[in-house]
Image (cartoon, each protein chain N blue to C red):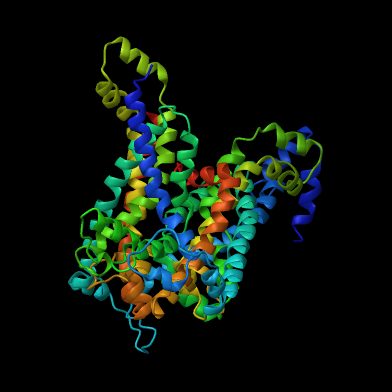
Length: 318
Length: 273
């Protein structure tokens, strides 16, 4: 405080030649007005991020190298024991397979449907704005809440969806209680929920394609299919890649609809990685073990994100 | 001229997709207006024979739904208000102030953006437990008092405001606080509104965080409360559906009035980098 006080009038002095010299010389040692302001402006956010994001991620790594069950007193250093156990844990691999199944089931179909709708919405038909609003509704609703509704619709006894399917001649199984059909049901809801989000981003990409490209192609005699492949898809490839990557990242973190629709069942057939982390860490309280899983997940997501950043930085210099 | 047939087919696709999208919402609203007995009769019907507010009234008695609703409001609005202030302050420092190490610090914000909440939940649970913050609004709200995405988004917006604003303000002798509160923030209203919508929606809808941080029914939010209610009881379809409808409707109504901010707020999550 004390050494700061003589600094103040110096900084406030009108910018004469010598004053500039002194302020340049002293800048390294006494923070100038803007630096001081920056410290104050950044302090609350810095505190929150350090305490509730950076410290926990470090702590999570530390936990992953310890035997740490909340209910047990023995909390020794474990080395790589948690990670080794993880490699042998069939239920963990099951959750990995389920997560990959979910991702492969969701991402391609969802993006294909989003792209189809985005293309139609980009034609300039009347009433497009209304349809766009409708498709966006699932995006703003809670995954947990809407999963309750879908669960009821798929119910074999009272579910309207299964009833309609029966009337159409399809006998829908009891989706959420079947090891074979529970995951497709979860995937279906995820696709339904995410189409609107992808569509908004893809539409922005489509709008950015210059019309002159299409006109030039038409003059060159390119047919509609060629125009779609060589102009639309080619111009959209970065947007598409981007949508793929963020969809994959969020698929790897799937939890809400699994928790609500199936609780990971039946027989762990819909148990995903995050659900298994939740089960081990916060239900069985094996926090060290769960943290080793969480860190593996973090590394995978981190690598995907870095790849994404690389691609898009490359894109900017392109 | 576009061939009529093609236009017809396109409309058919749009309408089919709209029907699939809207069907659960329509079912939800109509089912909350049915009696429990009618919901479980076979064959099921979309429209009720008799409209009744039975379930909509029952939800407040079968569950402490008023408490859930109040908790959701305090949690979602609390996080939104505090986070908007802190996010915009940090974004202001990163975009309008010059200080050593600014860009390096900003990289840390980007790193924070990459850390999934699922990875930090166990240490956070332990830490908040040690502090005695579990099952309190402090524990629910304070860890979310700032958001790396919010800082990032507002910084991108602030940085595009003309530099002359700062210079003229400084020549007039205004403080940095005045520059922030009286010039930059008012100019960034659209971005701040989008971020507000994003925060509100994200926290209002969130299941996992309230599920972990709260353990008494007095502290649960609507999603956590209803998800657990569904797991514990013989399913009461009408009551649950009414609860879900009451939880979803405020957002849908807000969406109808402020659609632009919803789409911008969410589309921006897709524009990182």
